[in-house]
Image 1 (cartoon, one colour):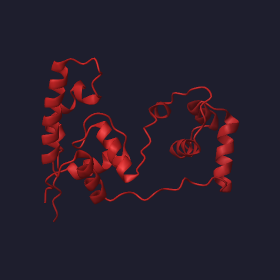
Image 2 (cartoon, helix red, strand yellow):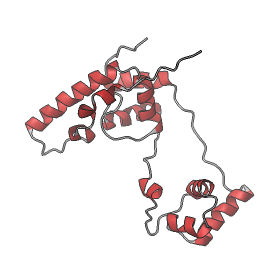
Image 3 (cartoon, one colour):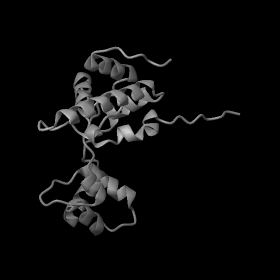
Image 4 (cartoon, one colour):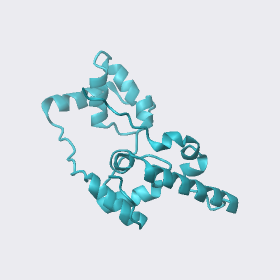
Length: 183
């Protein structure tokens, strides 16, 4: 019988550090010395916490390769993650929360994959309701579905994903220091 061991991220135990507004975004140029010092202390605490976390490698990989997240994650700031992505040639699109929430904007081009995703996720919904969610016309939804049915749309080519080791090497390069890897 195999027993699954559940690992809790270290940031959960130190939530007061990781949820502090000073870690969310870079300080403005008008920040006071006290704010800068407080941020430096929080970054140091968060960095130490991440370095000891058993989930560090997977957290770093997800934050660099899969998701565009804010704040301090996996021992990195948002800017450092951008630098790591540049080193690796990785591009991560920001999450489109407006589309997920059903918010639409006029004159916004409709994404083909989003039309297909909504149709597959909601097969019982009318095409009119999908068009409303996307903020486009019924004919636009029908056109995208027809193209997919006829195989006219070429899927985006995916680039090879970096390995975990490559992400860790880029992390070391960007942060300028070697980090002890847990065995």
